[in-house]
Length: 328
Ligand code: CUA
Image (cartoon, rainbow, N blue to C red; front, side):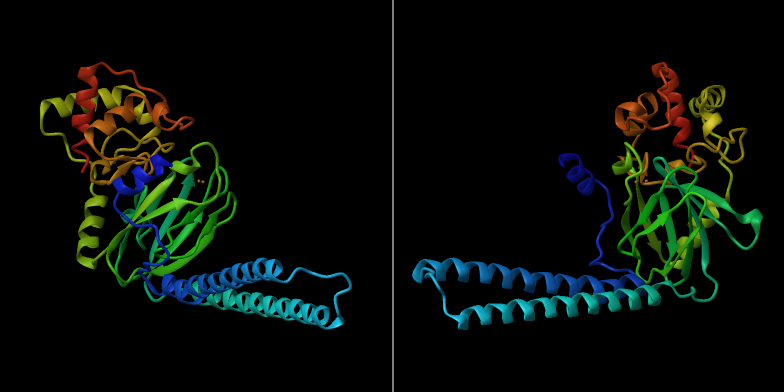
């Protein structure tokens, strides 16, 4: 609980259906969230009121043997009315849910940005699939979106069922092995929002978060063109030594750094790691200290994660950190 609270305070981005950023999330808030909340509130008040009334009445007028027929009939009528109202309310919500589902899953507007999101135990691979395949690029645990342009996410999973949930933009949608789900929406206001895996998927399900960064079109375009660049050649000798430690160790077996020999696909693409807000799927802030702790002992942070411990010498660790910080 304390850890969750710390995370909520530490990382930017709200996880809230009440602060929608586009038409889909607005429909969900206005036609499902608020009516359901109001109905639950009214029901709660009625039930507690009836309970208090019954308790109070019992004390002032104790029940007698052989109660007359009148009150019994009134009781039966009350139960009948309550059952009918409940049925009608549930039916109305059924229809509302179907209508909202239909309205929020119809085709994207023209020229959607296509992004393939792959849920892994326990992180998110995010691949931007432009019309031209040589323009594709991959990042992790951050979903950048241009404001005002429709987006279409292909949600897939190679291992177990995960659930993509960023309530500021849309509803929950599962990532299912062997099946591709499509999520269509648009972000209309800029902001940083939090997303979270919402389907239990193993030991570190709780530490499978991501960030949604909705940004104005020009700032998105700048981010996009930076992401397409390969990693820069490290400028200073410490970072160059760090690159050699990185390439000579086991890191390239799992991680890709575009423009180098590292092409592993098991873990997140690190080409622009330094530009991300968090590491380990929203588990830690992307600071030098957190990165050092994560590299040396990932199992202490996220037990069960695929990343093995790396008992580096202090000099090698400093060099690797210097190198990773050049991956902007
Ligand atoms: Cu992935 Cu829970």
